[in-house]
Amino acid sequence: DAKEIKYSVHLIIIYFWVMTHLSSLNKYFWKYRWRFFLGFIFVILTNYFRILSPQLTGHIVNTVIYAIKAKTGAATPQINDTGNYDASVRMLIQTFNSLSFSKQVLFTGVSLILLALISGFFMFLMRQTIIVMSRHIEFDQKNEIFTHYQALDASFYKSQRTGDLMNRISEDVSRVRMYTGPAIMYFINLAAVIGFSLYFMLRSDVKLTLIALCPLPVLALTIYLVNTIINKKSERIQELLSNLTTNAQESYSGIRVIKSFVQEKAMLGFFTKNSEAYRSNALSLAKTEAIYFPSMALLIGLSTLITIMVGALDVANQVPGATVGKIAEFVMYIQMLTFPVSAIGWTASMTQRAAASQKRINEFLQTGPAIENAPDAKSVNLQGNISFRQADFTYNHTGINAVKDFTLDINKGDKIAIIGKTGSGKSTIAQLLLRMYDVQKGSILYDGIPVSAINLESLRSQISYVPQDVFLFSDSIANSNDNNNSNTTAATTTATTAATTI
Image 1 (cartoon, rainbow, N blue to C red):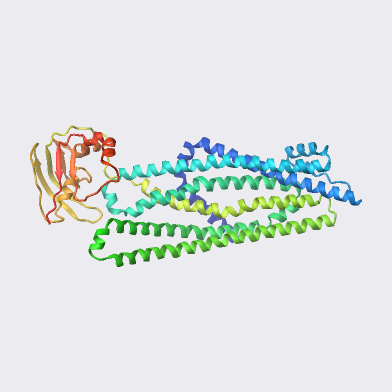
Image 2 (image 1 turned 45 degrees about the vertical axis):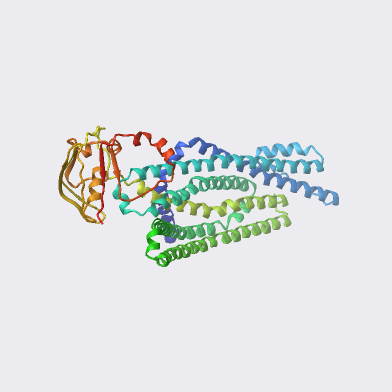
């Protein structure tokens, strides 16, 4: 009892942990609710038409066996067990009963093919709704993350690695898409298949149903143990992948420095170390997942063999209601349950991985920019008068006091050059003018107006800034002019150049 309680508590904790992080995706499901709803309906219809095949097959098997016995003179009254079948199957059987034996077999075969085609058609629609919905969500989520990245302040990027930022918008979003698409689709499919199968299996034969499903407790325990390990290893792999991406990104960006100081071997060593850590953990996860599928195959095979054996003994002992057709029907039910049941672990694994990735995404989405427009911020046409009043600024991530008690007045039309040794605060002053950072003490005024009271877009669009770091965007000059015409033609009232003395 104590073990069962502990097991249940663990499941509840995992469930709430997963749902807490994935709940931020609910807004997307609501946005694409019609696709989701239609996908749900198509999943139900797909499995409804699939579940009719075992019943029709079981009946035709009994019909064939009865016909063979009739020819050999050993016929016994044919058992009519169609009362437990679906209404549409009973209607088909009643229609076929008026036909000759050969036509019954022929039309039953044609009906099975049509059922497969109809089920396949709805499966196509199912994927066209749910999987396409997941691609739309992936698109929206990447745009949301990128938009949020652009809104964050410079201090955020000082403390974060570029490779990790890239990994969250690419790899983590891809893992989340596996939840919003395949995982949800397979989960609904699993529920529909198990629901339909159990319903008709119990109506047909309770004893055979219990025997066929007896391996399920072992299956549930295996899923729990494997997925607990998978969840922990998935989080570790995501961290290692971020390190690997960061290592590669920094190497590509600083390739000239690496070559200048002949550091290729050292950088290769760093990359190999990170790559080896990622590989070993990924292989460990693959080995863990490899335990699951053979276990499923063993349990499903065992269930099939036990069902055939018990059903055959019932037929041999002439147990009332026992037929060869019923055995065939149950074997088909078990085979239909094979993939959905084996996909439980896969679906749970995708969901837990998505939760781990969404947790990493939420960490950034829940981080607000330190530099924002004040509620009463307004657009101002700058005239060019700038004042520093005992400005003091310290970088939070390093604790370096870059600007201390700085006072300066710049009148409209003045040309001011600030020189000094590396690290004296020249670039910091330029960034304070753009309000990339806010001073901790003192103030900065434009035409007597505090910089914090000016709309950020209005402020920065009127300032020309030549940074000391050169960066080229991957675009043509013509296209950049078309896309940013309003900004490039904005009045350049104040020109600020961060000069560096070497």
